[in-house]
Image 1 (cartoon, rainbow over the protein chains, first blue to last red):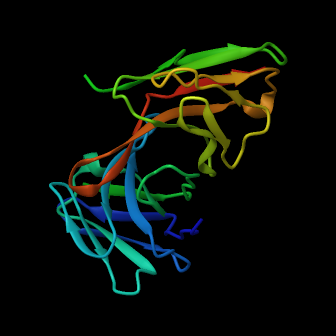
Image 2 (cartoon, rainbow over the protein chains, first blue to last red):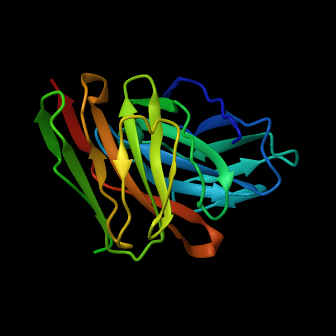
Length: 111
Length: 115
Protein backbone atom coordinates (compact mmCIF):
# COMPACT_ATOMS: atom_id res chain seq x y z
CA UNK A 1 0.00 0.00 0.00
CA UNK A 2 1.24 3.45 -0.88
CA UNK A 3 2.25 5.46 2.17
CA UNK A 4 1.06 9.04 2.34
CA UNK A 5 2.64 12.05 4.00
CA UNK A 6 0.72 15.20 4.88
CA UNK A 7 1.43 18.25 7.02
CA UNK A 8 0.27 17.69 10.57
CA UNK A 9 -1.56 20.99 10.83
CA UNK A 10 -2.40 24.20 8.98
CA UNK A 11 -4.03 27.49 9.89
CA UNK A 12 -6.01 29.71 7.54
CA UNK A 13 -8.16 32.79 7.78
CA UNK A 14 -11.77 32.71 6.76
CA UNK A 15 -12.37 33.44 3.10
CA UNK A 16 -8.96 32.27 1.97
CA UNK A 17 -8.21 29.41 -0.35
CA UNK A 18 -6.50 26.50 1.39
CA UNK A 19 -4.25 23.99 -0.33
CA UNK A 20 -3.27 20.78 1.44
CA UNK A 21 -0.61 18.68 -0.23
CA UNK A 22 -0.19 14.94 0.15
CA UNK A 23 2.94 13.09 -0.87
CA UNK A 24 2.62 9.50 -2.14
CA UNK A 25 5.89 8.62 -3.84
CA UNK A 26 5.19 4.91 -4.30
CA UNK A 27 1.71 5.20 -5.77
CA UNK A 28 0.83 2.26 -8.00
CA UNK A 29 -0.45 2.48 -11.55
CA UNK A 30 -4.01 1.51 -10.63
CA UNK A 31 -4.20 3.57 -7.43
CA UNK A 32 -6.69 6.39 -7.00
CA UNK A 33 -6.29 9.33 -4.63
CA UNK A 34 -9.15 10.05 -2.23
CA UNK A 35 -9.62 12.77 0.36
CA UNK A 36 -11.85 12.62 3.44
CA UNK A 37 -12.89 15.22 5.99
CA UNK A 38 -13.47 14.40 9.65
CA UNK A 39 -15.01 16.50 12.41
CA UNK A 40 -14.36 15.60 16.07
CA UNK A 41 -16.16 12.45 17.20
CA UNK A 42 -17.71 11.90 13.77
CA UNK A 43 -16.89 9.44 11.02
CA UNK A 44 -14.88 10.69 8.04
CA UNK A 45 -16.80 12.03 5.10
CA UNK A 46 -15.79 11.63 1.45
CA UNK A 47 -14.72 14.85 -0.24
CA UNK A 48 -13.20 14.03 -3.61
CA UNK A 49 -11.39 11.35 -5.59
CA UNK A 50 -9.20 11.46 -8.65
CA UNK A 51 -6.68 9.59 -10.76
CA UNK A 52 -4.82 12.28 -12.69
CA UNK A 53 -4.92 15.97 -13.69
CA UNK A 54 -7.70 17.93 -12.05
CA UNK A 55 -11.03 16.98 -10.52
CA UNK A 56 -13.54 19.50 -9.23
CA UNK A 57 -16.81 19.11 -7.40
CA UNK A 58 -19.06 21.44 -5.48
CA UNK A 59 -16.84 21.58 -2.40
CA UNK A 60 -13.22 21.12 -3.52
CA UNK A 61 -10.70 20.62 -6.28
CA UNK A 62 -8.04 17.97 -6.50
CA UNK A 63 -4.85 18.61 -8.46
CA UNK A 64 -2.67 15.67 -9.46
CA UNK A 65 0.55 16.25 -11.41
CA UNK A 66 1.60 14.01 -14.25
CA UNK A 67 3.95 11.88 -12.13
CA UNK A 68 1.13 11.35 -9.55
CA UNK A 69 3.63 11.32 -6.68
CA UNK A 70 1.71 14.02 -4.90
CA UNK A 71 -1.72 15.59 -4.88
CA UNK A 72 -3.21 18.84 -3.62
CA UNK A 73 -6.63 19.31 -2.14
CA UNK A 74 -7.87 22.85 -2.69
CA UNK A 75 -10.68 24.30 -0.58
CA UNK A 76 -11.95 27.62 -1.94
CA UNK A 77 -12.88 30.41 0.47
CA UNK A 78 -12.87 28.41 3.70
CA UNK A 79 -15.23 29.14 6.54
CA UNK A 80 -15.07 28.29 10.24
CA UNK A 81 -17.09 25.15 9.54
CA UNK A 82 -14.22 23.80 7.43
CA UNK A 83 -12.14 23.37 10.59
CA UNK A 84 -11.52 19.62 10.56
CA UNK A 85 -8.96 16.91 9.91
CA UNK A 86 -8.35 16.07 6.26
CA UNK A 87 -7.07 12.66 5.21
CA UNK A 88 -5.43 11.64 1.96
CA UNK A 89 -5.75 7.99 0.94
CA UNK A 90 -4.16 6.15 -1.93
CA UNK A 91 -5.53 2.84 -3.12
CA UNK A 92 -7.34 0.79 -5.68
CA UNK A 93 -10.46 2.04 -7.38
CA UNK A 94 -12.71 -0.79 -6.27
CA UNK A 95 -12.19 -0.26 -2.57
CA UNK A 96 -12.01 -4.01 -2.13
CA UNK A 97 -8.76 -3.93 -0.29
CA UNK A 98 -6.94 -3.08 2.87
CA UNK A 99 -7.15 0.65 3.55
CA UNK A 100 -4.59 2.74 5.38
CA UNK A 101 -5.39 6.22 6.57
CA UNK A 102 -2.52 8.50 7.46
CA UNK A 103 -2.61 10.77 10.49
CA UNK A 104 -4.23 13.55 8.48
CA UNK A 105 -3.90 17.34 8.41
CA UNK A 106 -5.67 19.33 11.06
CA UNK A 107 -6.98 22.52 9.47
CA UNK A 108 -7.86 25.37 11.78
CA UNK A 109 -9.81 28.22 10.20
CA UNK A 110 -9.39 31.50 12.03
CA UNK A 111 -12.01 34.28 12.02
CA UNK B 1 -32.23 7.39 4.18
CA UNK B 2 -28.96 5.73 3.20
CA UNK B 3 -26.90 5.17 6.31
CA UNK B 4 -24.55 3.08 8.38
CA UNK B 5 -25.69 2.48 11.95
CA UNK B 6 -23.68 1.29 14.92
CA UNK B 7 -24.76 0.13 18.34
CA UNK B 8 -24.09 0.90 21.03
CA UNK B 9 -22.79 4.44 20.60
CA UNK B 10 -21.17 4.43 24.02
CA UNK B 11 -20.06 1.49 26.13
CA UNK B 12 -18.13 1.14 29.36
CA UNK B 13 -17.17 -2.39 30.25
CA UNK B 14 -14.63 -4.34 32.28
CA UNK B 15 -11.65 -6.39 31.22
CA UNK B 16 -12.52 -9.83 29.93
CA UNK B 17 -16.26 -9.35 29.45
CA UNK B 18 -17.16 -10.31 25.89
CA UNK B 19 -18.91 -7.67 23.85
CA UNK B 20 -20.24 -7.12 20.35
CA UNK B 21 -20.57 -3.86 18.48
CA UNK B 22 -23.11 -4.11 15.72
CA UNK B 23 -22.90 -2.41 12.34
CA UNK B 24 -25.61 -2.33 9.73
CA UNK B 25 -25.93 -0.63 6.35
CA UNK B 26 -28.99 -0.22 4.17
CA UNK B 27 -27.22 0.55 0.89
CA UNK B 28 -26.64 -3.04 -0.29
CA UNK B 29 -22.89 -2.45 -0.25
CA UNK B 30 -20.61 -5.43 -0.64
CA UNK B 31 -17.56 -3.99 1.09
CA UNK B 32 -17.57 -3.19 4.80
CA UNK B 33 -14.81 -2.33 7.22
CA UNK B 34 -14.03 -1.62 10.86
CA UNK B 35 -11.60 1.04 12.08
CA UNK B 36 -10.39 2.24 15.42
CA UNK B 37 -9.25 5.77 16.08
CA UNK B 38 -6.86 6.79 18.81
CA UNK B 39 -5.36 10.21 19.53
CA UNK B 40 -2.29 10.85 17.40
CA UNK B 41 -2.68 7.60 15.46
CA UNK B 42 -5.43 8.45 13.02
CA UNK B 43 -7.76 5.74 11.73
CA UNK B 44 -6.47 2.20 11.64
CA UNK B 45 -8.29 -0.59 9.86
CA UNK B 46 -9.13 -3.62 12.01
CA UNK B 47 -10.92 -5.96 9.61
CA UNK B 48 -12.66 -5.67 6.29
CA UNK B 49 -15.10 -7.79 4.34
CA UNK B 50 -15.43 -7.96 0.59
CA UNK B 51 -18.74 -9.83 0.71
CA UNK B 52 -20.77 -12.33 2.71
CA UNK B 53 -18.50 -14.90 4.38
CA UNK B 54 -15.38 -13.13 3.06
CA UNK B 55 -13.32 -11.27 5.63
CA UNK B 56 -9.68 -10.29 5.97
CA UNK B 57 -7.38 -8.63 8.45
CA UNK B 58 -6.54 -4.98 8.38
CA UNK B 59 -3.61 -3.35 10.12
CA UNK B 60 -4.62 -4.02 13.75
CA UNK B 61 -6.73 -7.22 13.96
CA UNK B 62 -5.33 -8.61 17.23
CA UNK B 63 -7.98 -9.04 19.89
CA UNK B 64 -10.90 -8.68 17.50
CA UNK B 65 -13.18 -10.98 15.54
CA UNK B 66 -15.73 -10.25 12.85
CA UNK B 67 -18.38 -12.14 10.95
CA UNK B 68 -20.31 -11.42 7.78
CA UNK B 69 -23.31 -13.73 7.52
CA UNK B 70 -25.52 -11.18 5.81
CA UNK B 71 -24.60 -8.43 3.40
CA UNK B 72 -26.06 -5.66 5.54
CA UNK B 73 -24.46 -6.60 8.90
CA UNK B 74 -20.83 -6.69 9.99
CA UNK B 75 -20.50 -7.07 13.79
CA UNK B 76 -17.21 -6.52 15.63
CA UNK B 77 -16.58 -8.94 18.46
CA UNK B 78 -14.20 -8.48 21.36
CA UNK B 79 -13.96 -11.88 23.04
CA UNK B 80 -11.89 -10.68 25.99
CA UNK B 81 -11.58 -6.89 25.97
CA UNK B 82 -8.54 -5.26 27.49
CA UNK B 83 -7.88 -1.62 28.44
CA UNK B 84 -5.73 -1.09 25.32
CA UNK B 85 -8.89 -1.59 23.27
CA UNK B 86 -10.36 1.56 24.71
CA UNK B 87 -10.94 3.59 21.57
CA UNK B 88 -13.40 5.17 19.16
CA UNK B 89 -14.61 2.61 16.64
CA UNK B 90 -16.04 3.28 13.19
CA UNK B 91 -17.78 0.98 10.79
CA UNK B 92 -17.84 1.85 7.09
CA UNK B 93 -19.30 0.51 3.87
CA UNK B 94 -18.22 1.24 0.33
CA UNK B 95 -20.00 1.69 -2.91
CA UNK B 96 -18.96 2.84 -6.32
CA UNK B 97 -20.16 6.41 -6.43
CA UNK B 98 -21.16 8.62 -9.30
CA UNK B 99 -18.77 9.63 -12.06
CA UNK B 100 -16.46 6.72 -11.30
CA UNK B 101 -15.81 7.71 -7.73
CA UNK B 102 -15.64 5.28 -4.88
CA UNK B 103 -16.45 6.45 -1.38
CA UNK B 104 -16.71 4.94 2.06
CA UNK B 105 -19.75 5.77 4.16
CA UNK B 106 -18.94 5.84 7.86
CA UNK B 107 -21.14 5.15 10.83
CA UNK B 108 -21.46 7.57 13.76
CA UNK B 109 -18.87 5.80 15.87
CA UNK B 110 -18.85 3.75 19.07
CA UNK B 111 -16.86 5.03 22.00
CA UNK B 112 -15.64 2.06 24.02
CA UNK B 113 -13.99 2.22 27.42
CA UNK B 114 -12.53 -0.93 28.94
CA UNK B 115 -11.74 -0.67 32.63
